[in-house]
Amino acid sequence: MTTTYTVFQEQLPDLFRKWSQEYALYVPASAGGGFFDLKPWREGLEVAWEYDVAYNPPKRFLLPPRETLVRYDLRKYTAEPVFEAPKQILFGLHPYDLKAVNQLDQLMEGGSPDQNYLRRREATVIMALDPLTVSPTAFWSSIGGDHVNHGFDLYWTKIGPASFLVAVGSPRGEELLRAAGELLPATAADREAARRAKLRAHALARSNSLKYNWEETPRVLGRSWDSPVWRKYAVMCLACGSCNLVCPTCYCFDIREEADDRLEQGERFRQWDGCMLESFALVAGNHNFRPKALDRYRHRYFRKGKYIYDKIGELGCVGCGRCVRACTAGIANPLTVFNELWEESGNEY
Amino acid sequence: MTAKPKIAFFDFAGCEGDQLQVANLEERLLDILGHVEVVNFREVATRSGQDYDIAFVEGSVTRPADEERLRQIRAQAKVLVALGACACIGGVNCLKNFMSENVYREEVYGPSARWYPTAPARPLKAVVKVDAEVPGCPVDAAEFARVVKEVLLGKAPWLPDWPVCVECKLAGNICRFEMGRMCLGIITRAGCGACCVTEGAHCWGCRGLVPGANLDSARIVLDRTGQDRKAVQDLLRFYLGDTAATL
Image (cartoon, rainbow over all chains, first blue to last red; front, top):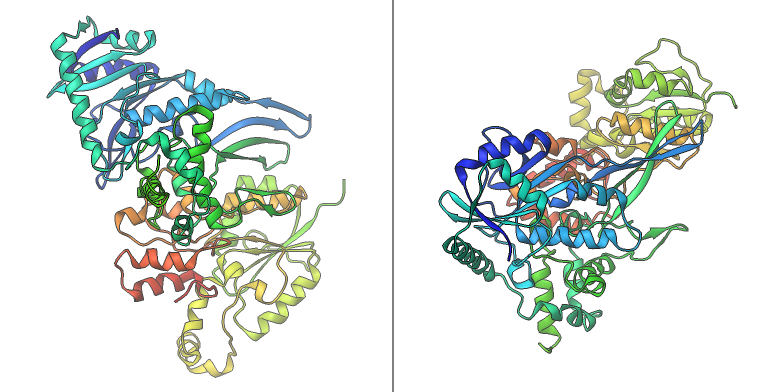
């Protein structure tokens, strides 16, 4: 059985203070205007326990928007790999974001392992937190984004006005918790309170749900290549890539180089890319494999609902609802698209 | 090694703000200028010559006489680089294209207006072939440096071909539309690092339209903010007067 402790809110400032001496500590906090994000912790920063969703996806801590991979010297014809892996704690990740990180872990490790990612991940402590509120565009509950039982170092559940049940996921997590001093093993009543708190959170998210079992999505898509749904939405697509870039599981990047001003040294870096951008599938000879918005729009949903599933057995969408919000044209909505495709294909399983 | 390429800066209708941005590179400028010989750069040097390989041209074409001068520069230069919004897309000068000629001539030249012939404002590419562009109002100094290095290294000068939205996401900005505001980032070519949004404003479109900009969708998206048509029109005309974006 998982080791669980009861921790009180009054212990947190001291824990945060101690952790931040060794780690860059990020906690959910207000980003103004009713938005929330993971922010660097500082003394006195109010933790937004009731945050609905972090505005930016957690991937930015593991796969930064821009990351140097190689430094080269044009005079000596030499190149050195660059690995940066700051020690960091991501505190308060909701389960759907934890699921997204677990997915990235699998995808970045498979095939040719991504050393830059894996080293950052190794240096990153993840402390999950059960949500108390749900973003209006989220639908994680119906696609398996509510129960995540691995990938965290500690998992926090608020069980009272000022108390938490903390489940231990790794020795590193337990060690960090010990900085609070003597630990109080959770009672059976506390574990029951946590179970009920989780159920409440999951019930909150059910107002937006898939109309079918999420595991059918690859088969629904398999029947939908020529669906009119793609054109209906793609005609509005601005090809801005926002849905890709805010997606916690999208990990595509482009690699470029820039020399310094003396043209003596330079660096090769990667930067987030997205399959909705018009030039994403452009190759040498000026051929574009997906020249039309429809091709790109359909590709994204196949990627989320089928291609990733074929690789790892789960959807490439965790239901966070960030893309729904980020799409200024109002067309990026996996829930709507999958439900429409399912209805259109005759509701068959 | 071959001789250093000779470069020259020229300006047409504009504020010379782009050359000022280049001058603002300061120490970096010295490193970059180590690879070239400057024969004409009014912002930083008094010397001027007419023997050059690469011409950086700022400003838009707004008078009949500009066309002839620009053609001469083109004839002399091996590479012509348009610098800034006015040169690349016509820029704010194109606001006059929506006004009566009598009105703006009178406004600018007063009683002697009749002695100054004028024409609609246009970007350089409306008159001559342009080899590379550094867009923006003003240009982004880092992008200018990068494009110059690419030209010097013999690479094809590269500009992002996606909208500013991408750079807002890289920066982690809260989307202006989610705040109920208008923003032209959805149709504007990135490369500025979404600087205006990052600083709290919205995108004005100074870098011109992104290739393949979906203007039909953009008009609907702007309209959905609830702003009246005049406000949308004003925003679209501010920099994009010479493009198909204007209402």
